Amino acid sequence: MRMTKYVALTAAGFTAMSLAACSSGGPSNSGGSDSGGNDTAAAKQTESAVKAQDATLKGPAPAVKGATKGGTLYIDDHSNPPTMDPAGIYYIDSNAFASQFLYRTLTQYKIVGGKPVLVPDLAEGVGKPSADGLTWTFKIKPGLKYSDGSPVKIEDFVYGIKRSFAKESVARNGTDYQRQYLVGGKDYKGPYREPNADFKGVTTQGDDTLVFHLVKKVPSFNYFASFPEFTPVPKAKDTRGDYQKHPLTTGPYKVDSYSIGSKLVLSRNTNWDPKTDPVRHAYPDKVQINFAVTPLASQQRVLANSGAGANTVNIDAIDASLQSKVTGAQKDQFVIGPSSCEYYVNMNVHKIPLNIRKAIGYAYPWDQIRKAGGVSQLNYQPATTYAAPSLQGYKKYTPLPYATGQGTGDPAKAKAILKKAGKLGFQLSYYYTGDVPSSVAANTARKAGLEKAGFKVKDLPVPSAEITKKIADPNAPVNMMNGTPGWCYDWPTGDSVYPVLFSGEGIPDGTTVGQFKNAHINAEMDKIGKMDPKDAAPEWAKLDQEIMTKYVPGLPDRYSMNTATFGKNVKNVSLNPIISMPSLSQIWITH
Image (cartoon, rainbow, N blue to C red; front, side, top):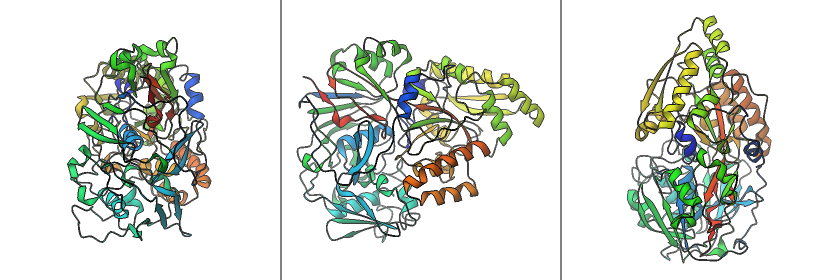
């Protein structure tokens, strides 16, 4: 999933990532500390593990002890999601707002003891695969209603899925799994371009059952069914590009107003039936989500409990200047935990030879970059693998000497490699955010470290407003730090990480690491992807090490931490490692 929320790290030179998700994106400019990140971060990052699914869980969700209804919850977000339409949501923040407040889906996650469990949502159970694994069946709960009081119909689910193929409009920023998994998905263009097409990827049985037809066995398909495109949308109410402004919702809140790029205001959905929902609550009367806020100013206001700040949760990475406050006197207004996200330093495998990629890894001045960028150790743990430690089956292996994610670099070692290859002065070119002081400072440290190792550096400053587009361009005239700057897994199994980043499918969309594509690795991924998730987990871990050892399309940078800062009136702020955000529907306000 694209990343969006980790602004303190972005300020150091990257922009955030989306659900899959880069506050709308940007190159990684952080590096490790000489201590290797703080011990609390490391411990928190590795304690998350995926538990078994619970297909029998029923609503309502147990009441939160002491919670009362009322008040207004404010959420401050530095990012500006490109869409809030369920067909196109694929960023960490917009996914959290959608899944917690607005759009119920076939399945969802309940956090039990800090760990995610897949549970039913609009479906009864978590879906049933056929014996050959090529169909998945979901029976829908009876009596469901939209926020306007109209009934949810089985055909609305089909239409919602069809909208997710409308890549020219409402689904422009959405996922591609449906195109890869569903029969006919490769060619189907969605209901606007092909209104009369006989799309065979999803059908119905009677008035309460959905059947998904797959081109290959996908044992984790029911995890994918928790995505916003699995929410129902009635065809008669589809206003296309304007639907996100006044959608019909099935969650505990409805949309009062949406000023794109500014704020989203929600109020209680009186047609939401908590008896059908095993996950969510609706304690605040209203929720106001503020976009494009300045993180430091917001966090200062929150910690001062000033005005609306007392009722606000800031979802961005904590600013380094506030670290002593949130670990000291105001530690009760801050939470930290594992996330699903990781950043990378991409190296184009078609433009930079393997030995030179390893030389970059030896030379990379992680500590200097992070220090110059003012990155708080609360926000990261140095990375040495391509998958975050909270992924099912994650296995740490001895870091490769050119992929440590921390340290000051070894310029002499790197220069020796260049000299042996006859490549002294090899030019590295990349974009960086040129209008953010901390990004500029981080880049100065990066450039100095690489030049000291014998590289020539062509660093190209780009305005914040353009960096996402620039780094996503597969034909950009650069050889480093383009493509996805990081990834948040879409569900907690390896098939939502490795194929996305390393199959080559995402090269045109800028969602790969190093524009890597390899027939052997693709064959391995296809084989592993057909396994039961529990059996596949150790195989994904082996694949991670193979890619790191033999190919090195990118350097692991850091595992991002899940954090939140909140005012004195905001209660029950707990973290969800799957969405890398607080469990927003569990929050209540004193008033």
